[in-house]
Amino acid sequence: MMKKIAFTLSLIVIFTFLFSVISSDIFASWKNKDVARYYLENGLKKTGSPNIVSSVVWDFRAFDTLGEETVLFTAAVGIFTLMIFGPKKKKKA
Image (tube, rainbow, N blue to C red):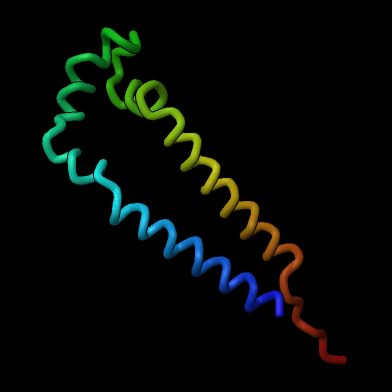
């Protein structure tokens, strides 16, 4: 019963996400924006960091990076939980 509910909720979330991405006008308008050039030209002025990679990751896209790290942390905790509390092999007597 719980597996069916979890599966149904997962499908609803996936299809809602896909529908919102496909129907969004934002992704179509990104073709004309030159984000990379903006980062290169304004990275040092706006962030003060001489390293363009760290300025993009930690200053311009900090919330995105936080989300990615949250996903990685959640995956690591899930794997650790499965390793510790997962199915155990029965010992033969």
